[in-house]
Structures are given as C-alpha cells and as structure tokens.
Length: 145
Image (cartoon, rainbow, N blue to C red; front, side, top):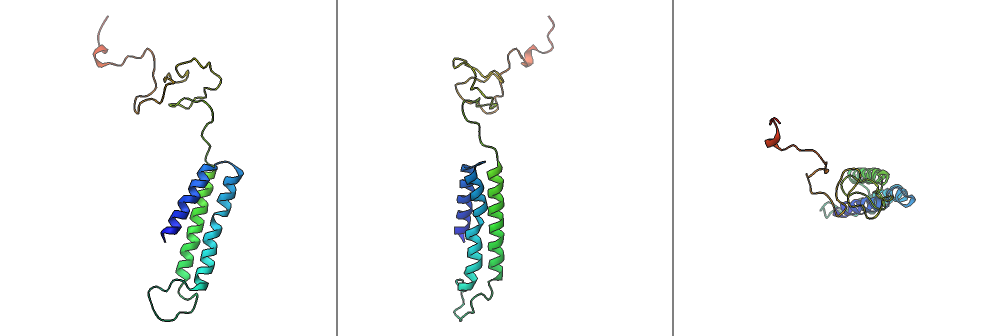
C-alpha cells in the first residue's frame, strides 16, 4: 500500500515541476488512470486474499478496496490539478525579500528600490525591509530637544 503513497508524491512533484503548462494539465488529467485501472482489475484477479487459505471467488469482498482506490484516484487528481494551477515563480532577476522585478534596473544597483534589501542575498529571517530614517530605539523616545 505504500506504493500508492509514493505514486501520489511522484505525481504531485511532476505537477509542481510543470505548473501552468500543457504538460502539467495532461499530468493532472491522466494521473488517476493507473489507480482507476488498479481499482478495476485488482478485484477481478483476486490478488488480495486477506490471509485466508480458502479458495476465493475473484472479486468477492473487494468492494472496500475498490472504494479506497477510487477515493485515492480522486484525491491524487484533485491535488494535482490544484498544484498545476498554482502560479510559477518569477523568472529573471527579482528581489529575494519582496520579489520585486529587478530586470529593468541598472546592474550596478546594490539595493532593491522597493524595500531597500541589499542585492547580495536574502534578508535575514525576521529582519524586515530596510527603511531609511526610521529610528525606533527606546532610549530616544520621550526626550525633549
């Protein structure tokens, strides 16, 4: 049964890799097909005997498995379709903090014009955008000039 979980993760990874493309929508549309085929033909073959050594009639007692496999197909396809519809990350140069498009700016510019973050990398977590001229230190509050 772990095979179905691995299958779902692989399908969702492929859907994420091909977001907003025709290949991504094809993956989302066709991903349920193998699971639906398994739901159709596993009971016919009588593969799962639930540990009993008695001869079984193929397909008897497999209705629960079919329901679970149909539910798996619906969930995998639904999540894949949701993932395919997610927007793609911006291509080209962009600010690592606020995702501002830097493609039209002078290459010598050292800071993002939107938030002031240096172009050398991402801002530290929790640091927030750099705002010039704001002084919020406690010792300066309440002092008279």
